[in-house]
Length: 361
Image (cartoon, rainbow, N blue to C red):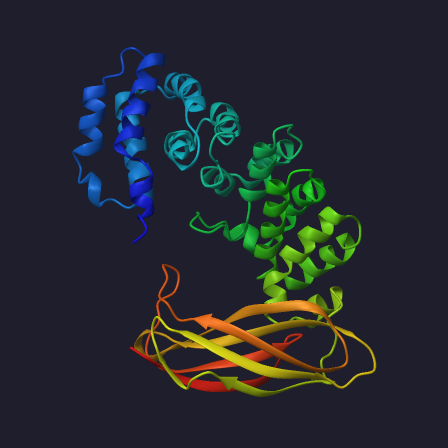
């Protein structure tokens, strides 16, 4: 069984190293008291973000109570760490620096080079969006790709596991100059964030995102890559304008038939194999986005529909036999429940055929 995330980070080794590094910079740091603070409050039962926040508060107790003095220490300690553990430094800023922008915002730009300040910047954006986005626009021009990425990632309207920015969900226009500045960034890390930001916006403002994508598409390989990722939710939803942007036209002359399962009854943990025939009743090849949807039974009998991609390709006229396998093993992101399920075959956003099967315990 894979280790839980909460056991991979903020380990005893990290806590010891954090204490040592802090004492090297600040000799008055009391490591014994720091360890007592860390482990004295039901440490092992805490989840990952709870451990991070508890470490932040423990540091705050052990460091000078004067925020500028504490930040002078932490900006010297932070370069010794990287990855998720190092997010304790921007978390410190989020917890204690909201009233001291002149110190906090440059610190977030520094700390993001070793971890990420994408969560910590959001309370600042919520408090004063105009002032916060002023910093973000400057960061979009920074020479460091981690800082440029923060400019995009930090203002995502629907950033997972992060504080909501309802104002940007309602009106994403302040975000657009940053995305425009980064649309051809040499770093894939940055471009991926731009694409994810646009994908977030598309869930509330699809036409706005499609306007942008139509302007960007064809400009360069970088912008084409961003546009395709940015449109993934729209493509899964069968948005005709998004489909046409990538050459996936009306599938009225494409038929799907003979959907068959290797068995009609299976159990949770099994794989289901299915085949079908697709027939192009056309005179020339067509670009096709081929997907299948699964109507899952959820807890208390509710249903949840999820779409999975099979392939995107150019298909010649005639018959094509397609085979696929779907796993019904439980995962951390999906738990299965017994009951009648359904698989449907989708061509260019249009459901063509569906079939039912029974999933047992």
